[in-house]
Image 1 (cartoon, rainbow over the protein chains, first blue to last red):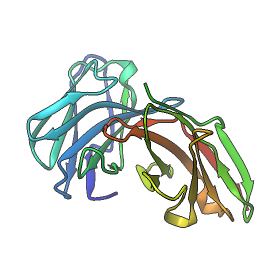
Image 2: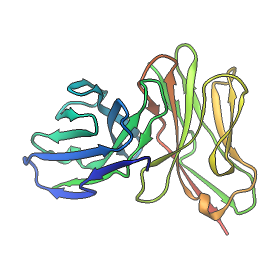
Image 3: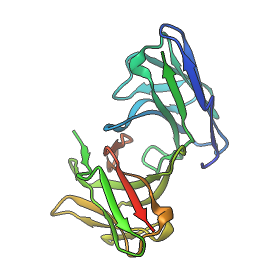
Image 4: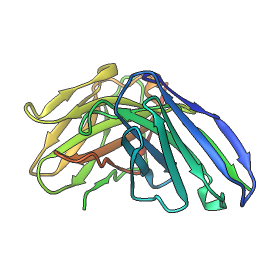
Length: 112
Length: 113
């Protein structure tokens, strides 16, 4: 999985609780992305980062925030989890903005 | 806006038969096109991409894809399918100078022995 790890791999939480997912890369790639995968929708971009402390919104960013304090780590936070955020979350990295994106193994999140 | 359509939710083939997974796209300007494969409980693995040049692109695991500009299609093919090719396949498109990658809904391929 291209030197990308995600933690945790599985999480069950309750509605209203905060949740943080971590993506860690060993490739020293500048760009990092968070996607969610839902049946019938493929993957949809939540947020992306183009450098340390530089982030921007994707197409489904409501209810999510991100942070990147180091090149290798990109955190996704659900401030107050809702059942609609039950999904599989994938992190991706790319060397350049228009280079191929490589994906991590995913985090399966269930919000009860 | 850009989009990808994978018209078949499922494709079933017998081992040894040709495999085709269809993809059509819509994007302004020249497209970058990608195929990814997802095995159960795994992340997406990059298979191949089309940027420019030869319309027939060869990728990993014996897969290839043909870019057809007039039909705005980028179908994935394998001459002889294996049971181990059973997985979920995603087509994705991006504009030439943009990071935004738009994915199709995915096609589940089942190869029976």
